[in-house]
Image (cartoon, rainbow, N blue to C red; front, side):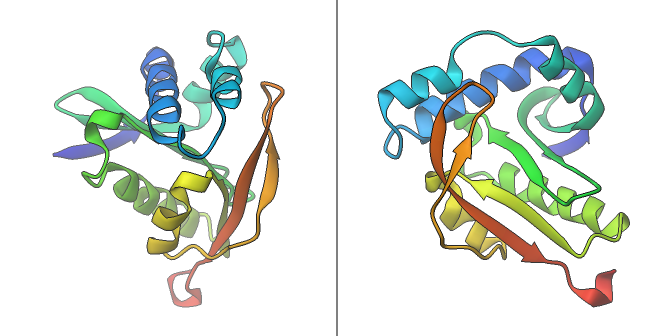
Length: 159
């Protein structure tokens, strides 16, 4: 069974490793080797570790971190949804997205936004997000990646 909890500082390495594996294994058909290499190079920064402790949530199975996600409760921007490739297709990303949507509703946000990787756009559409236009995401690691800005209006009756 998948459970979700608030991340703590000690989860940072697991999240970082899952992120790197997910990028390499799930994005390779959509981005160049050079982009993947730059996107996943280097180690964790202190800023990343602090961000994990302050804003991330993790998915677990039997006490093992298998995924992550976060939402900015002021802007509705969703970020860092990554799932361990060994658990891909088992509902972890969908459950995390539903959890973040519940947070958005608690904070009375009118919509959720995200910048989808090309490989994940169909998944987000299946979860009610809308968006088709190609854009460019400028990574803090210094690369530019094609992405699809998407949003999901939250039902007024739930606000």
